Length: 221
Image (tube, rainbow, N blue to C red):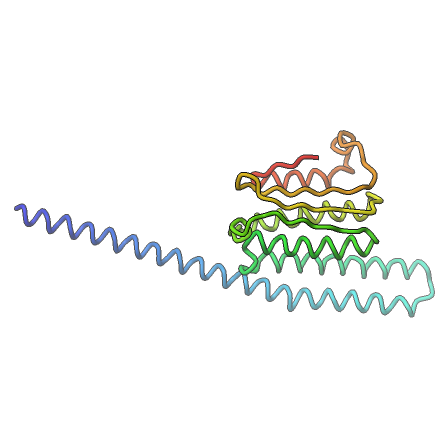
């Protein structure tokens, strides 16, 4: 009886181990399929939608030279600008969906590049001081979180570019007690934060706050 009980116990333990292994394998296969699907979606967006929007933008700007009516030129110009904005949004989605961009280091490489290109186009000097440690830079982050971080940061940079009248902008990225802290400063004009929160003109700021809070972050202004 003792031997039979030991045999049954070993059999159940082995069965439980096999079930756990099968479950882990199924999860791994599911994650692999999801990753491949994300890559396919990002590739399709880039190749199909992105190419179409790029063509619309190019054709609209080309058509401007053939129009004489100021009203027609304005409408065509708006079409070109909207197509260009949509193309940039598609590129952001493609980047966020790409599984190879799943670390904090990759996120900040893109943020620094975007900031530099956007601000310097407006003759605003941009300086970045990177104090984050390598371990934090290699930390994996989900697609939704990296999208929220990038879009919130992008909104901040766009606001500075359009409204601050700044000459200099600095970004500091550092790790404090294993938490990531990013500080953005500019020497431009300020605004009434309370007034912005109480009016529809503050939607951009509210979106920034909502995105950061959705990833358990905190924003100080």
